[in-house]
Length: 263
Length: 249
Image (tube, rainbow over all chains, first blue to last red; front, top):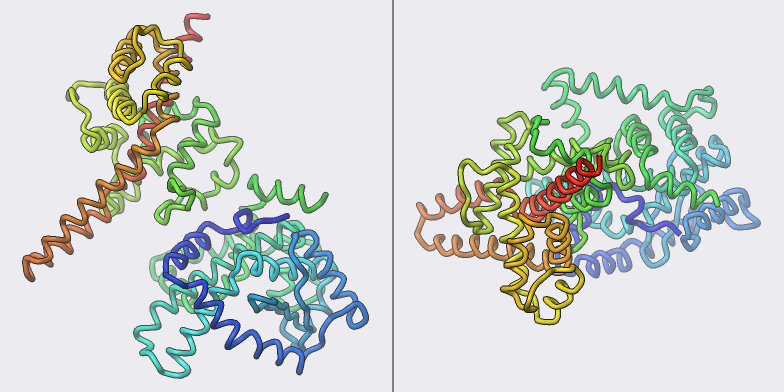
């Protein structure tokens, strides 16, 4: 059974430790999720998406079941939504669910789809959903409702976006440990380009990452440009995700988890 | 990394000892990751931790040096920390190690530090713990007392290195955590007493801000004290092992 400590990226762990220092943060986040978002989202899912079961889209249902078994996590509800963009997300604290776009189901093969599911399970395992609600809540208070000044909520929001990017790396580790780093690289390539046929080299993004880092570090101006651009992203760039997993594949923890999940 | 010859012996140390040093640098005594550490995300850590620690001895040395320096000065030094000897002397000053001489070698200073730390640790031990330490290590003493153990330790440093290592290890296992905790607490008291100077008006606030920022950027004694004690212990052990091999050869 996988534990959150096994897969957590150090920066993600540091940020979560810092969040834990805020008194009552867990209970406040949990009540925000339960009262505001969880019921609302579940209702919306049931109303507009297709719920996977052993009768409806059984492939997705069985793949999710197998993924959760490998990780050692109770199976969440799975929904399919209509979207040409390959993506997936998870939400919920008391009864989490995973939503997967129709294009992901169509264009990813079984192993890659399980890898995507394992990524979402990684978020559930690390309790990212709980703290992600703070990001969402601050964003709404600051930008959409204008209740608190954006100049005040902005820096906190940017800091939380930084954590959000790091949390994605933890979830990526869960995906790579569950399905293997090669499958992860193939999945990331498919999501980056949106194609189902990507050829036979799964490490193109890793090579591209080295090229990107060369470009980024070429001058201070390039570095500032790239970092300013990235500061507003909730997810790391595809090349950095590929590169991080390529580094992590040499670690003791990756090898240990691979042995365990393959048994 | 600053090529510090005083830390080059780390490449010959045992895996478990290096792992303890690495854990001191990356985790606090509650097992939580240190916010300012940069080790756990480096390539060598991913590849070497926890089974092949010798492969990352340079990164360990570099991280220890960074923790031992002021962040601003480290930045000016191109990301490098001060020399190990400088850090060691700072730690000794902090731990009130007496009889330090400018001509002392790193080995001498470390042994003095170990004796001071152990003497303090022994002072915190109860009668039963003293007895168990002395019985665990075959120390030739007449009485099971704190004074007896400290005296034995100082004699063993010269007479019997193997027993010296053994006693240091046993004493450290029993109490070093308590000592480290106290070091942190006394640092916090320093910041608290400085807080009182906030009452001195705007000039005091300015002084306080600069002082506190400089202090926050300064050497992280909560890390360097246990790390240097561990390095000192590892060196004593390493020197003893090398001497034994030479005698055997």
